Amino acid sequence: MPSPASFAVATIFATMVAGHGIMSVPKAEFDPTVMRTTYVATIQANFPGKFNDSPDKNVAAFNKAFRDQQATGFKTLRAMLDPQGPDCGYSKLDVPAKPIPSDGNVVWQNPDSGEGFVPSHTIWLDNTRVFQNDDCATNFPEKPAAHLPVDFASCVGSCTIRFYWIALHQDLWQVYSTSSLQLCRSTNANDAME
Image (cartoon, helix red, strand yellow):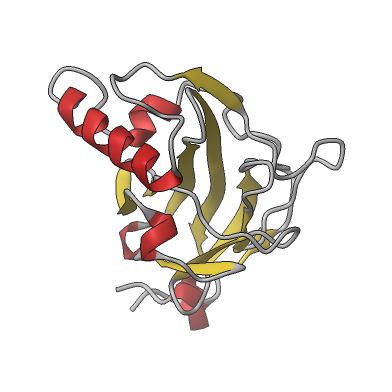
């Protein structure tokens, strides 16, 4: 298993959602001309079900509809959200590398309002899903910061971490696309892979 210190991360985070938060560890850097928590796209609800109810009911309706369509439609939340909005949202790509968290946790928080999560979330390292939760609001209730366990061991050489989520407040879904980090092996012999 690689040591978290054996990686460096160049942050190219995309924007998350207005009022819902950002990934703060590793710290994203954003285009200063855009609100850092602005969603990147909207999708008209295209699954059967009611999506303008309570948050819990909206999540349950979405999760059921998503599972029901997987055989013939989108296999993953990433497949559904990847084509929506700019590839890296409003994050800055030309930033210094950042270390991967030594505790293996990606931190999601809303530093502006202190609100917690909204569902559903998925994190990928290249083409490997390393985190998936269909109801982060219930399963990661920490406020204002939730710690999400990510196994960075699957990143060998270099890879990109992406964070996707969707807000289901109404029939017009908000897409909060991608947090991207370029990961690469350290060239320092003291930080070599174990």
